[in-house]
Structure formats: structure tokens, C-alpha cells
Image (spheres, rainbow, N blue to C red):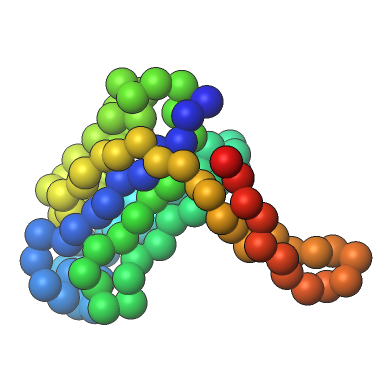
Length: 110
């Protein structure tokens, strides 16, 4: 499996802060889909910038075609709430909890 990232940009300012009822429904479907992908161990991480400028979704897919289909199937993209750009991605550093010590440590992936 390869890793990909897609960058999400809202089509209008203030979308996250003041969505319409229809937009809220679509955003809930977007979030539910990402939760399913996390449960399936396909999603690595996802989240928005707190200023609403963009969000990212880092995930695994077998091919770029599968990755594009995953991105295009995102309800926020499919319904036109957000635009998305797909890129191959490598997780190089990440923080991992150290269960024994209760702390965290950085890991390097090459």
C-alpha cells in the first residue's frame, strides 16, 4: 500500500464556522466516512487548520487510481463543498505514545 494526501479547501469562507443545514449534513457525512476509513486502518490522519484555510487527509491506497477514487468519493468533494488536490505522500516523522513510560517519542520512517 502507498500513502497519499489530499488537501481540502472550502469553496467559501466561513464554511466550517457557519454551515447551512445542507452543508452541515454533508460535513457530517464527510466526517463519518473518515471515521470509517480510520476504523478500516486506511486513514492515517485527517484534520482542518483552525483558521479554516484548508484540511488534509493522509491515507493508504493500493494505487493512485484507488486514491483518486477515495478522494473523489469524499462527500465534501463530491457535493462541491470543498475542492481537493491529491499527492503521493511519505510519512517521515510522527509522534508515537510510549505506553510503558506514558510519554511520547518521535519516530523516523525512511
